[in-house]
Length: 279
Image (cartoon, rainbow, N blue to C red):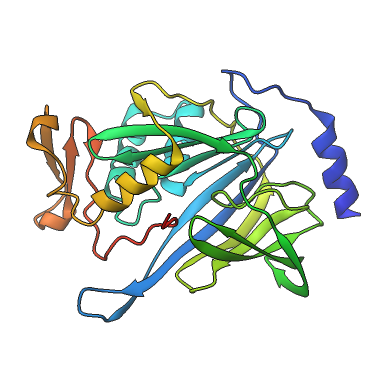
């Protein structure tokens, strides 16, 4: 019965991808965890939250939950003071998911936006970049019966659990193209882990793609440059690229400060960066 309801709702509205806001039919909140070893080879685990907004016609937007909160306040026309407060929270988010993935935007493609401080970048790739193989195993995630699939992408093997009861082809990050919403995903090394913690009706629109001020590139160039940059972010910023540097103090400790270079945050990570893609 729930599958029938979802199917009817998804067919009720046909939206073309334009520069206008897109109605969000559903929202799925994921906990994103990265497990690794620090410089002293001690194990650590970092975690944060991401939002997947799901529209019709395969459209989706996956990004950091703190950015979603700020965008939501803007749509609700909250006070400037409140929007500023949430913007600061977003800037101070130490474990910030700095990718925004627009699924099936434009049609048949994905648009990915990210940052290599002090520059913002954008590139496109196929809407469904992973060839999946299917397993007979089942599991329950967030109250939904899920099936299992595997696929290789970006130098990693991914094991995902998708819910046929939710008949959309979206999922966290770039893990799309399955006959049901991806509810959980982990790479075979156990480093990156996405797990749905809430699935609900949409609350605010999906904002359109805005590539203003972004450098257009391709996936291969960006991944190579990003992974190299994150080995030593401060050391990899050339002095001539700095037009303006601003340090905003939120407390007495240096860790409570936000560093902006040309208006773009420089994330000061506690642990080593481990990219979702190695190649």
